Image (cartoon, rainbow, N blue to C red; front, side, top):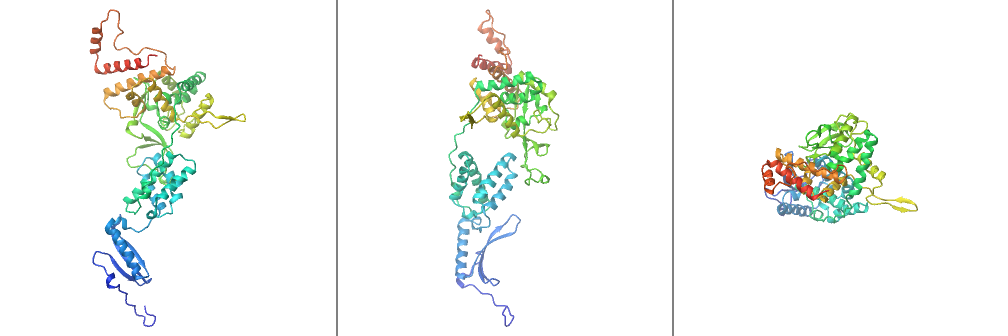
Length: 481
């Protein structure tokens, strides 16, 4: 408005050289703040509203140059690349994390959330996505290494950060290639090793002695004996239900669920419900404790148990505290046992027996340092002993759940029987099973039996018994003791 006449001032018109054709955007003067503005349409957003990017400047020529630069980006790299810098890296990571919560498994998400909130956002959260450089990705790596994390851990976090950046590009944000191309640091040499057979013997003998002294110790003893003789992962053991422990036929565990605490949709808010990815199966036990499906289909398996373990479990079933989840190894009060308490039990068992992965040093008469085996190394020990006994890789995979198992009745029967034979051999190796001959399908040869008669007897067997006979013979020949 003119202060004298009260009439509206005529709008400024851009110079002829600054006028646009239809479809090339608009360039105009904004009287409200006396700025020249260039605007480009870049499509619709998820709600169907028109999206536009704008540039402006007090000077008409400067505004026009900005406008032309944006138009050039739009023409050469597409609409997504022409977006303005509307998000910091931290804001995008929070948005990406919300999407990940409904996409990945709860345990995986818990780790990803730690990576984002502890390392990524504090280090580069304030940087605009468009301004990210290789140095920012390297800064995240440096922060972790300075905090004493391994290069393997740092590489995992970097991989997640780069996944988040790729997702940002897919959403239309402009992210430079450099931070997405930074190479992961070389993996650290892990210090994982297996217990020796002598160390494993020390454990199982101690467990047997505890049960001999007090039958109520059969719960504690069977938990750790099952770790050696069934190759169960920690969550699989803590989530084992009595309905999936079978004493009939070939004694076995049906390993089909694991125990986990699911996160709430909103952290610390119990009323928000549980964050479960789409299609992810779970059954609530109590509070945040759930039975959740195994990590992969190959995890599902039938794990045989030898007689010593079966008898321990039969005794323990009489003493096991009643609990909502029908759990085999709950706490004394019937609540689910968490992994931290389980780890503590395993560490204390090693301390009792003087078992060390890395022995402590003696300094000024006191023991300093030292490292015990972790729970997962029991499972590796089981695999190593079976390999040492020359049990075939297929049977080991069936026991430990590393490969798909056929669902046909005949294969399941043969697979379980062979796994049972292998575990009996493992029991003999750990001195839990007396030396006994394999179950005879073909009678032992006599002085009068000829080779032709034995071959005829073998040919008369049905396919299942032939497979069983050959596999048992292979186990016995590989492990004659």
